[in-house]
Length: 522
Image (tube, rainbow, N blue to C red; front, side, top):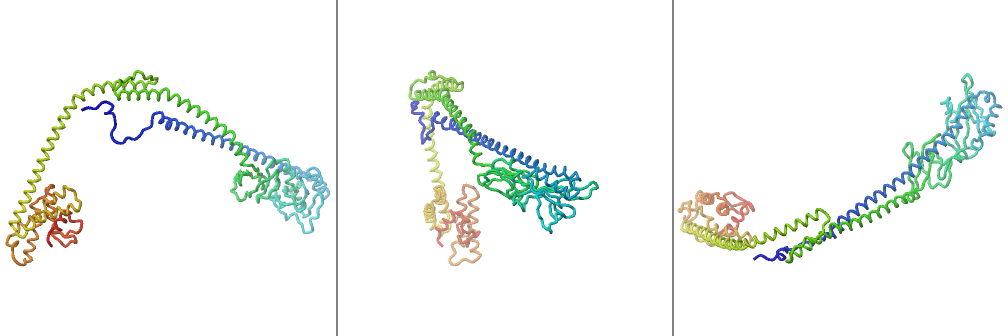
């Protein structure tokens, strides 16, 4: 009998609990949308943060470039002064003129210039203020003198050193002086006090160092220093020490201009605009998700729930009232219409199913009767097969009386052992059925040999051993008789390989042959 619509709709077995549409949309679509927007917000946050942070770094690069330009221009101005002075031979005609020149330089450029001096080509050293360099002092042997001679057309800078009189970091700029005939008169040199020159050039937390890292001039409190020579030579060096960043640029006279900045302060300032962007995006995201949820409830969830409720009412036996569902989306309206048509088709098919159900029951009964008849036929065939096997065993028994005495025993013991080995029931039946045929090949052995009293000759024994091969030939190669053939052919094989006809060992011997072998007397 057909069940009612509600009963037939119940699924059988364990059913996984599925989420409702509302929960599904919230847990998947809305949540994934929110997470996606959150990821985008975080990416925007990082983008703005690193953009602002890079602006700070760019500003520092502009600042270091400007500082380097000012420092270079200032030093070059003293070099240009030497070019102008060296072009005039009059101030260098005698010692008194040179002394007046150095005095004017000192008066005009002090405190930036200390002890302007002239080393003559005869080894004399004239400076202002006067200083006793000692009798052994020869300016021609000094590095600044020799360096100036190597480039007579230009002024040269000597790497920073500590002034022997003032005990302050100093740089020297020198220029070779020649007369009208290109005869060397000497070298004019200016000792530049770095701290005085850089005083108006440096900004807060900036300083000037030499290649060894020694501070020549600074402004503000410096947290740490570094040695440029330990870094790879390049245009701009950027080094981070602790929470401070140092930007250094190679400059004139084997010096470096350096700017120190606080990474912590830059990070804090960078967080302000990036956090504002993140907060704004999160607020927009929250409002958008809230609006999306409201829209989904109105145009998707509510109509679908009403359709589901109409289906439940229909399954409980009530009319299918899909017309009450208000659908504002094309797909939802189409779904409602398709469901209405489907219910109409179901009602029609239910009537057809009721008419055919009785026919199915009658056909089922007929199939069951046919199955019972086939089962009886199968049992008859098995019985006939067993009878045939027993009859063949009786033939062997009549042919070889000693063999016949153990035919029944072998069959029963083989079945017993097969069951103990938990072999498949079908295989157990075949072993029981074919075990009596294990010596069927002996019908080809002369009876005189089989029943000979006393010991057989070697030739007779070899002839008897061929009964397994003859028995295999009698059974044949039919796949259905494979178990019988294995029993007949291999029942004299031994697990240790001492049997015949092939001397098989262990699991090389089929299990059915091993079982029959165990039932035979040794």
